View 1 (tube, helix red, strand yellow):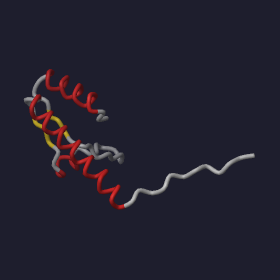
View 2 (spheres, rainbow, N blue to C red):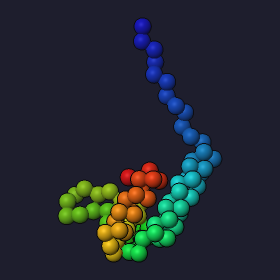
View 3 (cartoon, one colour):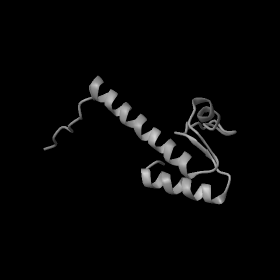
View 4 (cartoon, helix red, strand yellow):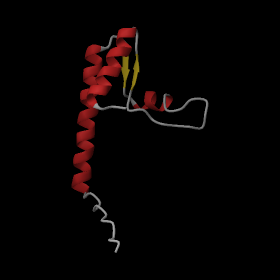
Length: 88
């Protein structure tokens, strides 16, 4: 017969806080790494993220941050850093 699928329990408030702390630390690390290696602008503020969240369509996806490259090398390094850190 079929067995009921097991459902993972919801995280506790403490576990949620830890995940948020880890996410913030990971984001801060990404910002520092990008700022150190990119000559263009590295923006992770809420206003910039909202500005880049949409285009002329109805589709909206808020980015983790925005890099405005000055050079082709900036673009290459940004993509490499994102790939190394597992950032989409």
